[in-house]
Length: 263
Length: 354
Image 1: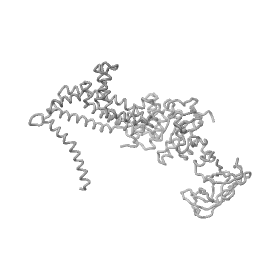
Image 2: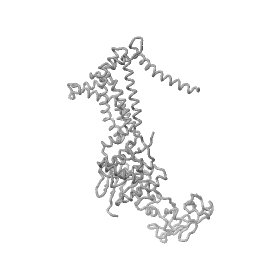
Image 3: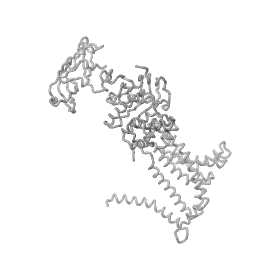
Image 4: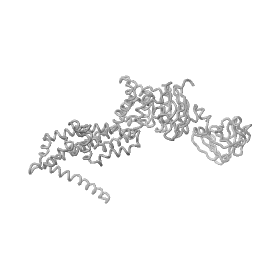
C-alpha cells in the first residue's frame, strides 16, 4: 500500500472512531438499565412517559408552524433578492446570520421585555400568544439555515428567465412563486425545513424562558434527574435527525431536474 | 406600409448615465417578420425587452394594434416570447409547459388539452407530451418553447436569439420551421439575432442596429445590396473595402492604387481630390476581364482557398487585398499564387461608403 493511501485510511478511521465511539458507548449505556443484561427498558420508560409524548408533540407542532413561517418569509425574500435586488444580498446575508452570533437568551429577554403582559403587544399574556412568540423566535433562529438552503436552491435555476417566461405567459407574482419557483427549489426548501425541525426539537433556552411545555426543557429535566433514560433519548433524537436526512435524500430523487443537469 | 401593427416611436433607454437605445423608431406591418440584427451590445435585445415589458423605456412609446402598451406589465400585453435559454419550466412536462399560459388565462381544461395537442402536432412532436424538458434535445426544447409561446394566441411573437444555443444543422432546420409556422399563423414577429445569415434568410425586413440606433431598416435584398452606412456594409456579408481618391468628380474618375476606375453617377457630393472608401462584394468581382464588366484593376494572386463548390481567391492590388469567389470547374485548375491577374466588375456594383 502506498504511504498516501495509508494516511488517507488512517485519517478516515480516526474520524470514524471520533464519531462512532461515543455513539456506540451511548447506545451500550442506554441498554444497561436492567442490571446484568442488555434491555430496551430505558426506551420503554421514555416512550411510555406521557410527558415525553406531550412535549414531543408540542415541539413537532411548533416545528411545523416554524417551517411554514420560515418558508413564507424566506422564499419570497431570497427570490426577490436574486431577481431584483442582488446588490442587497450581502446585507440580507448578514441579517440572516445574526441569530448565530446573538445568543438565544438575549433574543428571548428582548421578547419578554417587548411583549410582556403589560406591553402594548402582550403576546405573553396568553398561551396562544406565547406559542406564537415561540414560533417567531424559532423562525429567527432557523433563518441562517433556511435562507442559505433556499438561496442555494435558487442558484441552481435561472430565476430571471423562468420568471420572465411565466410573466409573458400571463402569470402574476403569486402564480410565479407557487407554480414555478417553489416547485423548482422544493428540495432546498425541504433541506431548510428539516434543519429547522432539528433545531426546534432540541431547543431549550427559548422554550424554557417562555415557559412552554416543549421537548427541550423536558430533555433537560430528564438529564438532570435520571441516568439511563437520557442516553436512550439521545439515541432516539439521533434516529429522528438521521431519519430527516434520509428523507431529504429520498425526496431529492423526485426533484424536478434541470435540462443542464439531468442527473 | 399599411397601418402598422407594432409601432415603436422615439424609444430611448438609459441605465444610469449609459444610454443603450437612442431614438429608436420602427413600424411593423401585420404578419410581418422583422429581424433586429447587430453585434453584442447594440441594444437589439433591450428594444425587444421593452416591447415585452421587461424594461420600461426612458422615453418614447410602443403601440400594438393601436393600443399604447408602453406602461403595461408583461403579463398584460398578450405577447409571446421565446428565449435563448429555452426557459421551459423544469418541474412541468412538455404538455404542462404548453398549457401553462392557457391555464393562467383561465381556459377550461378540455379546450386547453385540445390546444396543447394542436400545438404538439404543429411542431411535429406529438409523442413528447409526457416528457420532461431534461429528457429533450436543445432543438426539441426550443420547439416546445415556441409552441408554449404561440399556444395562448398572442398578438405578437418575440424571439430572443432562439437559435444561438443550438448546433449548426438544427439551427438551419429550426429557423425554416419557425418561418413556416409564422407564415402559416400570420403572426407579427420580431426576431433578434447577431447572425446575419439567419436574419437574411428568414426576414421580411431587417433592422440593422449599432450603438443603440437602427442604422438601416430594409428588406434583406436592400440591406445586402444597398447598405446605407459603412457599418451596415461591413457587418452584413463579406466586403472588400478599397481606398480611392477622386481625380475627376465630373466624369466620376477615381484612382485606386494608381489605377483609374470610372464610377459615373456614384460620386454625389464628392469633389476632385476627396478620398473615398469603396466597397465591393466578393460575388460582384470576376477573375479576368469579363464581358459586361466596365471596370477593372490589375494585381497578383495572393491566396487561394479551395472550399469545394467555390474557390475563394484573394488578389493583392497595391496595398489592398480583394476577395472574390469563383465556382469550381473540374476542367479548369484553380489560379496559382503569385500569378498576375486582372479583376473586373460592374461599376454599378461598387458602393461608395459614407
